[in-house]
Structure formats: structure tokens, C-alpha cells
Length: 634
Image (cartoon, rainbow, N blue to C red):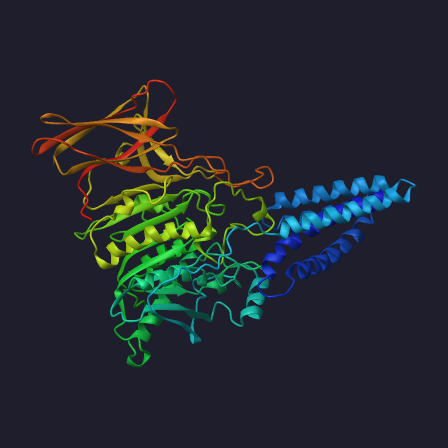
């Protein structure tokens, strides 16, 4: 009986710590001392559930009734929670402490009993502090200083509502009731709201619309991009931060995973409201914003949101409610996806493929949430078909995580207690991460919205050592992209580092020390001085790649490039109880290279050969997108 009581108590204590830490995350925005409230709430739930289980177990009196009841409660609770492995680990620690305490309680010495109970209390307090504590190194409060005046205002909410029932579906009745109690509205009356930053003296300012991703709904995620809005407004851009926090997750559930199209629709409805405000001469916005010159930026699930918005923007009516007529027709010139999710499928005929819009993809190699570079799938299928200049670029940022692009989210990419098990070795600070992001975003916008030159220099070189940049534009003339050669010879499919090794929707040719590859140019391509040979490459180890290009007059290029394997980062401190997809696996991220072609006069390029000059080692290199381009015109 004593062993049963202590073992059950330990199991319950471990479960209580885990659930309390989890619920403190959800309660922190709305109540004081959320940890105490969380423990109280979870304690009541455990007593009710445990009491019912005890009554059932009384029918089998020979079993350790309390322990079996506690394990049933743990099974019921952890089966419905995130990170159940961590929960079962906590239950196991509690159970072990309970067994030790039971053995100590058998002693007749009071000091031994008191020592056991003291150790239990200290262990309980220490584990609780570890689970709900934070080792974040970034306060998230930084706002880069700017020297330019700007106008900042909040819009919407007062009467500006839309019916989103066609786009958002309630997963449970409990969640529907909880959302109406907390917000005072449901999916039938979603508010249009956000913040706008305007340059004080600007007219017809190009517009950047920023959409946050999925976090806890009571966190004001949209204000986490004020640092970006202030910097861009100082450079003459109007910036709109859209508030869609009320559709994010809660302790009661959420609209996910089918909310990404709705996020894009809500963004367009917010844009529609802002355009209506600008058409009102009394609003003070008349002539301030150019709605035919827009870039959409989305972080995390917001990346899927802007992909959906780009598609919906070109439709005449809703694909879900034919009675809803669209009048969007905004001039979307470019999109920026920051650590995007990849919920939207890219199957044949998918509408979520970017066409004739500039595209920038940013992702960190220490992302503990979207832990593989999902956005490469949309990058690889983005196409250009009209006569305008377009370009696309992807940047794999060394040491960047998921949340530090947003000052509200910070450096913890998961909720407690899982956040305590994320590895941080090699992670850069929030200030540095946002400076890097801004360093890539600003030149992208200058080209896309202000027409300043072509592909910026920032994408032909790194802003920090270790970043991996891939790019393409409409001035590139490709000899080979290997998409039509899939399954032939050494042509391989590039994959992501997720558990399923999802396709990147891209192929390349595999080169080893014993196997070179020659690209034959089928039609004459004239190149010479002032031209560059371009290609992308990935290597799973540090090596050199020899490149030889031949023309009608002989060899026009012979050079080598140094390939550095992107480092394998540790994402979890304990993979056994907190597995993270891609942990310890190298992502197959291609890097773009350019080499100058040297010849007397123009020459017909007839072929390019790639080889690894070092005969030793087991290095494998993947080469893709081989072609030519004139020198950059910055």
C-alpha cells in the first residue's frame, strides 16, 4: 500500500509538472502568476480524472490501484498533448522518485523519511523551474533606431468585420466556445485590423504587407515585425502589419491545419479595407500608397498565407463560396517567404506556384520549428514567362532560428517544456539575425518595387560567412536543368531533411571523384568577354570542383571552385525524448557560382565539363542549372 501510494504520487507529480509547464505557456498572456494557475487547473483535472479511475480500479482490488489509475490518467492526457515523449519521461522520473521514497519510508528512522521527502520537494521544484524557465538570450525588445519621421496608426476592428466561415473550420465545439468567450466573436465575424507605417513625406509609396505565422493566439505576433516596418518606412516604403492573431492556436485547439488559405484571404480583405480608406479623401491616405506596387511578406505559416493570397488575388470569385465575388486585383510584384511552412501542395496543376513575381526565401539552419527548408519547393517551381525583368533568390542563414525574425516570438522555437530541450550551440543572437534579414530584404525591395538595377550584389555574395545563396533571373540562359533527365544515369532528386525526405521538386547531376559529367550544348550559345558561366552546386564534404567550358575556338574557361559543405547542426539536446526532424542531417542546399568566360571575341559555347580533381575521398557533388549570363549591372 505504501509503495502504491508513493509510486502513484510520483507518476502524478511528473505528469503535473509537464502539463503545468505546457499550460503556463497558454495562460501567461492573460493571467498573473500563470505557473500557479496552471498547476491549480491541472491539479483539479487530475483529481477528477484520477478519482474516476480509482472507482473503476476498485473492481480489481489486487492491482496497485493508485498506480494503475495514475498511469491511465497519464495515458489519457499525454495522448492529446504535444511532445508526449517528454511527458512520459517526466512521468518516469516521478515514478522513480516515488519508488525511492517508498523504500525510504520503510525505514524506522525518521531522519531517513524526512530526507526522502526533502529530496522529493527539491526535485519537484528544480524540475518545475527547468521546465517553465527560459534561457532565451534575446529580450525581443530591440527596435532599430531610425532618423526619419513617419506616421504610424492602427486601423480596423471597429465595425470592420468579415465572414470567414467558408475558409475557417472549427475542429471542436469546445474550441468554438472558448474563442467566443475570449474574443467575443467567432469565424463569422472576423475583424480586419493591423498597423500601418507611412513615410511622413511620401506619395504613391510602394507597399510591403507583412503576415505573421501561427503562434499562441493571445500573443500579438504582428507587432513582432515593428523593427522591419520602421526600417522600411525610413527607406520610403509603406508597411502594413496584418493582425490575424485571433485565428492562431489556443489551449482549446484551433483552425489549423486547414487555415492557410484563409490567412491569405484575410490578408487580401485587409488590403481591400486599406484601399477603401485611401480612396476616401477625408482619411488622409489619398495618394499615399501605390496599390499596384506591392510585395507580400509572410513568416512561418504566413508564408503559405501569402502563397494563397497571390493565387486568390487573380481570381474573380471565391473557390469555396461562388456567391462571393472578388475585386482584389492588387499589383503584387514580389513575395518574401521567411522560414515558411509547406502545407500547400505543389502537385501537378497546383495553383500555389509563383509566376512572374520576384521571390525571396529566407531560412535559418537552426530552425527548431520548421526544421527543414520547406520553401525550396516553391522556389524551384517559381517561373518567369513575360518580358519584364524578374529574379528569385534563396538564402540559408547560418545560425538563424525560427522565432528571432519576430521579436515577440524570440529564441524559443517551441513551447515549454520542449523549448528547454532545443540546442542553442551555434545560434546567432536576435539582433544579428534581424540585421541579416534586413540586409537581404531591403535590396530585394529596391529592385522589385523601385526598379533599382538588377539582381543585387547582396545575392551574388554573402552578408555573413556561412550563408548559402542560390539565385536565378530572366537574364540567365540555361543549358541544362536536368528536369527532363530524371531517372537517367547520375541524375538524382534533391530532397529535404525531413523524416520522409520530401522532394525539393528539383533534380541535379551527381559527380564523384571517379565520375565527371559533361553538359553538351544542343544549340549555339554565343558568349565571350563580359559573360559569366553560371551553375549551382552542393557538396556533402569540403572539396574542389573543376569546371572546363569549350567553344568553337577551344577552351574558353578552365577554373576550379571551392565547395564547402554546410555544417550539420544539432537541433535537440536530447533526441531520444525530443526528436526534431532534420536534427544532425545536412540539408541539400544548392549554392550559385559564377565564373568569367575569357575569349577573344564572341564564341559558341559547345559544352561544359564538371569533375572533382582530388582522386581520394568519398565526396559527392550535385550540380544543377548550368548556363550563361552577362556580367551583373548593379
